[in-house]
Length: 302
Image 1 (cartoon, rainbow, N blue to C red):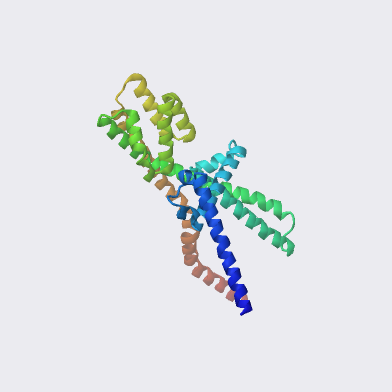
Image 2: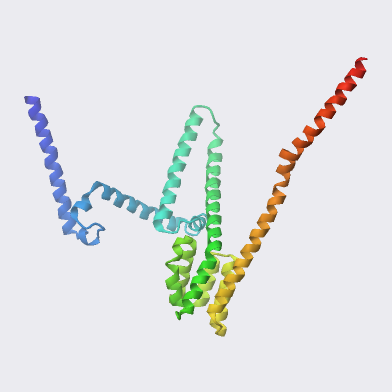
């Protein structure tokens, strides 16, 4: 009975302390106007454990993003991360967090292997270098994939632009209308056109064109910039120019596809010789060669 009363007393004390903490958080919630700046609609959502973990993780992402922008903003690696498809703050900071966690686990595994005597001490710095180049290769592949999707869907952007201008919209209005729909085709295309539209609105067409080509330096963007500049300078009809540009780009992509199909025959030549023609030749020659060798061995015996 004595032990049971002690357990009840401890349980009551824990409940009392938790109620006091909840009341204190509720007073802070209203006294410090957290209900105004918070993303949650009620106090129960604010103190929910799942929501608090999400808030803390979002603060961690903000801290990591601010840290990388302060120390890595001018590096080629950070620019490559942005080009590889991690455009938003949450995505970029999440990539750095995941890369750091994987690096720590990888180094712990290498240290354990070194302690057990399976690897030498020289492998630790070598593994760091290999990890860096592995991440860089991964980002470069993602960047190439983003550019491939950008090129494949750029003609659809030109078609949408030409249709909007044909209905009587200005170039700025058509860009604003089209940029929101491009996200389903290519994220890089959507973000680059949104930046292009924003730069035209708040700066100038010349600066917007230079920035667009600097962010995505491909031939399709260069031709689009030339078309836009000529239309703005000489007053040419942008609807017709964009339609002709879309037709030319489609023809160019068709020629590239034909070239790739033509390269398949050259690439299949070596496997064809090694794995088909050579075994067939051996199968044809081998019986006669064996007979000759057998007859020669019989003559030598006689």
